Structures are given as structure tokens and as C-alpha cells.
Image 1 (cartoon, rainbow, N blue to C red):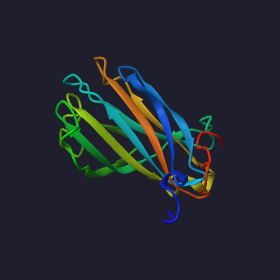
Image 2: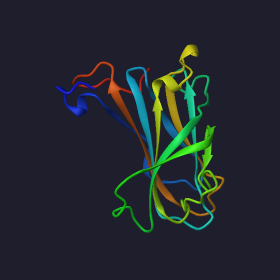
Image 3: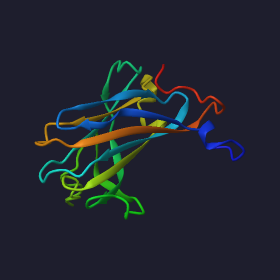
Length: 179
């Protein structure tokens, strides 16, 4: 990122799914294109929930924002902030390097540690670089998918994509929801 440009001229922020989405059923995030960006932070925020209701985070990649040729995208680390009834006292993210890369991470237990993601308010972030996608086969689009099968009770959540290092910085920043 050039230091002589405004941050808002180097990033794009897109809603994956609406705030207040009940993840008791599947939540398909919108697709975003990384063609004009070096990477994307996938940000998932869930409210306090019910014991035993652990969400599962999955990432998909495609060759177009319509989901063309969709297939799983593996990742090997995740960042989190987890707080009892709120996140106001949680100042830093914790990074977890996954024992095994995955395309679908059930948050009930990560590397054998219960994160208590079922009962607590949580923010999870996955950093996806454009080069992590199958670029040799023209994959440049990304989607977050939350599996609702593990959720027995209603639980509200929101998710966002923060695309960074715009390759064509300026005002306006290129869209990430168009091919």
C-alpha cells in the first residue's frame, strides 16, 4: 500500500451476509472477486449463543462472482477474539495455526481446544491472499459459507469481506462484486 494514498483508496469492504442473519440455517455469503486486490480478510461475527451450537466456517473459490466452477478453498490459520457476553474487553486477536489445512472448520474444537464459540460472542478472521486461490485455473473469486446443521438454536451473526492492497488504487476503488 502506498503511504501517500488514503486507506479508503486501497481497500474495498463488502457484506458477505446481512447483520442479524440467523445461522441456525445455512448462510451463503455473497461472492467477491479478488482480481483487483492482493487479498481479503473474511470476517465472521456471531452473537452469544447456546451451549453445543458451534458454527462451522467454510471457504469456496470460483472463476466468476456467479459461483462458476465453485470448489473448496483450504486455509491453515485463523484469528479470533472471543468474549463472554461481549467483546469490549478483548483487545487483541489470537492466531491459531491449524494442525491440518482445511476448507471447512468446525469451531467446536480447533487443534483439540474448545474455543467456547458456542456460548460466547466471537469474531473470526481468515486472511486469504489472491495467490491462495487456484490462479493457474483462473480462480479469483471467494465466498464464505456457514453451515447451519451444527446449530440447534437461533443465533445471530454477520460477515464481511475486507479486500486489501487494491492493485488500481484511487477514488473510487474498483468493485469486488463484479467480474
